[in-house]
Length: 148
Length: 177
Image (cartoon, rainbow over all chains, first blue to last red; front, side, top):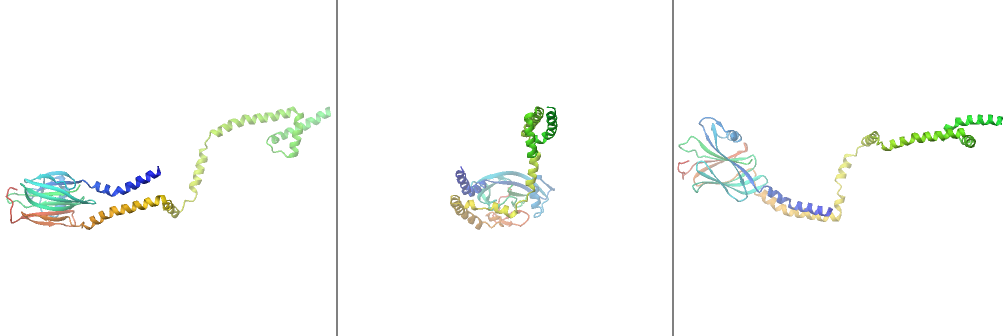
């Protein structure tokens, strides 16, 4: 009995590095699309954390939430979602290291690639992609990616 | 007869005073031989002695039964207090007892344990080195590409936000956005 227990313990010990990898197999990313403008003031309550962060960088007075979605990313499996204005956001989990996820972000419009970037997202950190300010519009679209 | 009767009465009187102590085995050897010499001839003293014996049995049996049933919790409390009050083991001895590796030095355990550690190191080391060398944790944006826009990346240490800002570039997107 003791021998069996010892072998089981050693087996578990040997597999422990793979358990760590398995734990990071899926990554949750929160995608929030907002319209930042200087028309009016205020912000949606679900943007409070971002408002605190972006408020120190930009001088927009108003942040209006247009889309809020949580996506679950698996390694090398792209996930697409449509974001305003008429664009498509594609997220691919490329790699993981401890708590940091390496994510490829692709923004396209009607199949045309507008932006491709590779970002490393750790929990509590966010990446915001914004601009350009449309000529005939008051606001600017900002897409924020964050890890819950 | 009368004289003998007087002698007998006087002896009985002195022996009866000894009976209690004789019964409790507290008499001297001389007193003991006196009582034992007197008892065969005196039915009154024998009766007195039997009464004492019966009385003892009558008292002892219930007491013994009660003692058998009694757990004496106060006695255990006293013992436990005594154990607790004993000097506590030295911290160093306590640590040594925990860090005693002698059971692990037995061949049966040592060989599989060393093998397991070696295999574990061999498995994990490449992963650790690969990951650590390719991840400078400070940079959030690895690269940015855009044929349509000019791009600015702002990566402050604090707050915990990185901004990728797009500017109108040479190839402007149709103004539907």
